[in-house]
Length: 150
Length: 83
Image 1 (cartoon, each protein chain N blue to C red):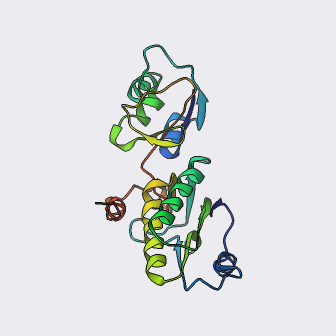
Image 2: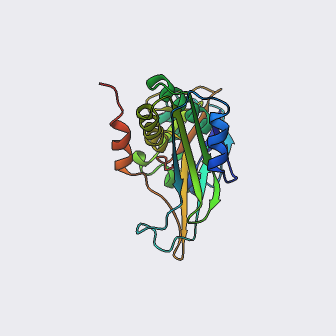
């Protein structure tokens, strides 16, 4: 399942919703991305995430489908927020469920690497000096490329 | 066709979306960029650095050599930075 929303999310509640009454899930991996105040934008006051409604949902669903094709998952969830966020706030949540941890760990990592280069979101950082659009990072492309099939 | 602009392309052009009748001679995304660039300084500034502009046709990533039609939704935006 994928969701794009302005509101915050509750990690424990999302984990519980994903497992439900199932007892065949042996591994649940969660990744949460937070707004970070770092050296590239010291004194970060806020970050505004813009996205492309429609294409965002489409790309996230495609990414999730691909993860489910590659790994044996019993469930998965991607939640991505948009709008104005302050340092320390949650931006993105990925949860993968599987019988065993290997598939759950790899699928969660894959989902994040793909999402960063394929989902149409843009970050605008606000510091004391003004507002700046964040540049895409080469490392993110490299991180995605490691999942390319030979 | 419907045109959409995001992030700093939206700011430079001053619009988030607009309708455009496919102009004569516009076959590909590159033709469309050339046409838009000639419309004014905002557009010229948005498209001045071709490598920094990504395009999607009907919500799928596309290339500048891809063809466009009058019924397409074409979006221009910088490389994505979500996650």
